[in-house]
Image (cartoon, rainbow, N blue to C red; front, side, top):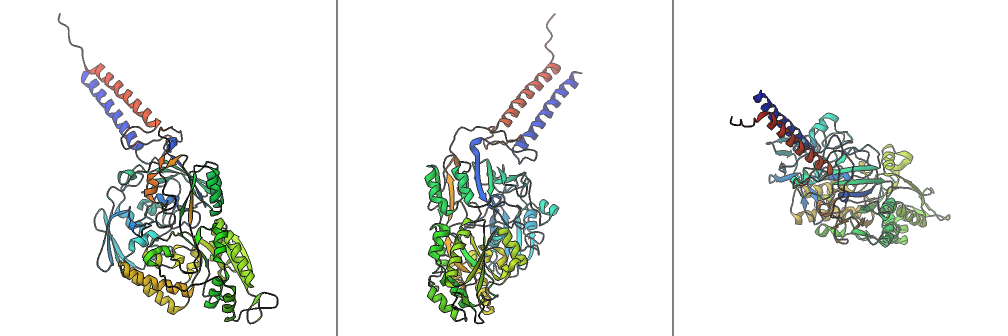
Length: 620
């Protein structure tokens, strides 16, 4: 009996220990049953324009991708100095001709559910099932990658039928800026079109918790495994609020309900003046505001007509109205590559000006002249009517469109302006609603323009413009398109900066001369931020919250953010919890469980002692 009771006591201890071991593991992994509970001072509030309907890089169309770029950091992210950084791969090697690449997964990289990132995840994501899917193939690598395989448990090999020195960079251009590496299990279960909603499995520093399509509120929690490989952010929870327009982000900042948000340039001065803890971070000349059209359709298939449009628009007035002066004119470039690209910018490009006289002269070469009614007419007497479309998602686009409409009307055009959402423009272009394909689209894209050869060499529509316009070739003239493709192949075939610059200068010369799109300005990207709750922000004039591509977080900047409060207070947002790297309980739940565990162990020990240890027999 004594032996049985002793065994029962030991078994009880083992059961308790096993239960607590399970609890301890759950507390350090992504919770599937409840939300982690974060200290109030580690909760970050972020406001973004546009509500996402998908968290899948392939099916994402409108809204913002910025928040979920935290979940899937790219294979090769662009930095502002022109270099790149990879969180996904620790080693990337290639043969001398760039036709075979070996990529090794970063040791210790783990999904937020505790499962290591595997070669199966890479090959399933970057393969015919997902990214190379015929339906999507945004990277254009379906025709380029001839085979792929796992060399061992951590290294994959991609073999190509053409030299590509920028394979990893092309991975990072997919979707909204990041390599779409998702768990193979997710893709295999739901397919390439999965919206990836609910609670995501993330490899990045944060994961999305219980998000539903169209919701204006999103919660993101810190991935408990990210800090085992890379610096851990001090942010435990991100509360994301989605708003309809950019102008609303400033209201949230001024109301004290947001710590960070992109802002409309017209609100920058008032924002800074409203509170001493509100500031503006100015990322200079990082985008392109453009007029996009199909240059295979009349009247845009005429070079003289396109040149006349450039001369007819006052870019300085446009910048003042649309961006409150936070932009650079594009008269000396007319290419998607600004002068900030350094050696990759060609300083010997054709120069345009604001000149209505020159514009009328160019139109006259096409037989378009001004009639007695004050309007421009084709040679057959028909008045020239232009349909201008722009989005309502960005306040600067609607403000800028008014300037463009006025300038073109002053020249003598009939101009019809239609404003609607980006989603509607994309849908209308696909269906050619109201003849949008024969019109002009004004759009401000923020690729952020790093001095990177691939970004500067690709068509502007691939990296900055609205996707529908890219349904045609970049240059309508077949001879020019052939020259462009030859130079782009040259860019992809070398990693020598001098050779790359030669090819890029040729490409920019073709763009500025032939005008496949008209660049109106290189706008700054402005962040409004508050120092009330968080400190260690980037330098307001030289720093960045982004990597070199739009909507890709600058991990260093985000990791550096530090709570102003040093004494944590707790919230009651859920039942699960996590712990700090030191192992000291971070949240009340874990502290309570630790105390209960201690009591159970003591109780188990007393029970075992009571039934298994006999007091010594006293001498008679």
